[in-house]
Picture 1 (cartoon, rainbow, N blue to C red):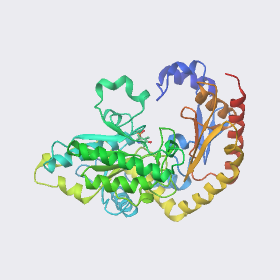
Picture 2: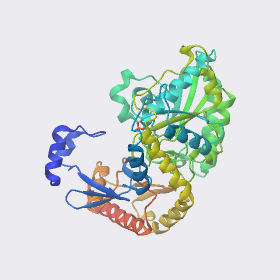
Picture 3: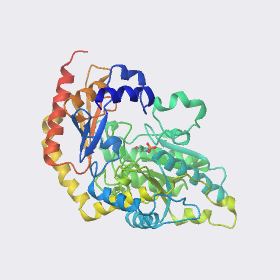
Picture 4: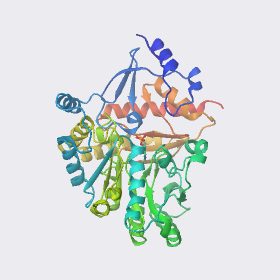
Length: 441
Ligand SMILES: *Cc1c(COP(=O)(O)O)cnc(C)c1O
C-alpha cells in the first residue's frame, strides 16, 4: 500500500491529537510503516531521524531488541490482570526497583496509564491526605508560570498554556501561578542561580499568605518542556522543597518528561538533592513502548490513608492500572540503564553534540542555545508566523523529525543516537534553520 492511500484513509477516519485537522489539506500526514533505532521509515521508503523521541517517550530506539524480547516473554505469561485484589511479579519488581532508584523515602508506587492521570492522582492524593489529617481547607494548588502538566481537567487546572486551556476555562478550577525560574528571564547581570533564588523568595512570600488553603505546589523539575524547554538552576529545587516543607504544602515533582535520564541524572530531583512528597513518572518509563505512569510517594502519605475506614483509603483506579506488559517494558528499560552505563554514556554523547553544534549555536538567527542532559533547545528569529510548521515540513524533507514549539527548536533524541547520526541531525538542522531564516515573510 502506498503512502497516498493510507493517509487519505487516515484523514477520513482518524481524528489526530493536538491537530487542527484542516491543516492537513496542505500539510501531508506521514504514514510510518516501521522503526529501527532512531529512524522512522514511511511506506514510500523515506526515513526520518526521530529527534523528538516520538513525543519524548522513546529512550533506546524503535524496535529495541531487549525490550522486544521482554515483551514477547511476558505475552506468553500474563497480558493483564486487574490490580485490585491481585498482584503479579512485574508490578512488584518494578515498584521495588523504582523505590531503590528514586530519592530516599519514596517507597510507595501508585500506577495509572498516562501522564495526565498520574497528575490527577497526585492532586487528589494531596487533597485527600490533608482531609485525612483534619486540614480540609487545604484544597488549592499552585504551579509555575508557563507550566504544563497534561490536558485532562485536573491537570489543565495546573497547566498555564493558554492554547490548551482557553476553550475549557468554564470547566477548570483556578490555580495561581508562581514566578518562572527560567534562566532566560534573569535580569541583566543576574546569574541563573540568583534569579532562581529570587523566584523561590517570591514563592515563600506567597506561601506565607496562602498556605492554610494550599494542598500542593506542582513543578516540572529543571526543564519546563511544553513551555519551550525552559531550563532553570537546580538551586530552585532545593530552596522550594525546604520552603514547602516549612509551610506544610506538598511538593509534586512532575518528572513525566524530565525523568528517566533526560536531564543527565536518572531523575531531575537528584540535581536539587530533594525528596518531593509526590513524584510522577510516565513517558520514557516503558522506553516509549506502552502507556504506563506511576506516582511515587512517602510512607507519611501512605499511612495517612491506612485505616479501618474504607473512605479514608485512596479510592482511585484505572482499568489498566499496573498492566503487566507495560511493567515488563519498564523493567527491561531499567535493565538497560543498569547494564549499559547509560547516564555516563549520555554525558559523552551530550559533550559530542555540544561540540559539533558550534556553527548552529553561532548562526545569526539562533538565540539562547541551551542544553541540559539529553535536551537541547534554541529560538530561531524568523519573519514567519507559521515557523513551527515550516520547520517541521522542511525538516522532513531533510530526513529529520523536528517539531518546534513556536519558534523554539529542540532536540530530545533517543539515547541510542550515534555520533554519525548526531552529525546528520546537527548539519541538517543548520541547513533547515538557515534556509528558513533566508525566506522572506
Ligand atoms: C507529557 C506530559 C504530561 C502528560 O502526559 P500524557 O501522557 O501526555 O497525558 C504531564 N506533564 C509533563 C511535564 C509532560 O511533559
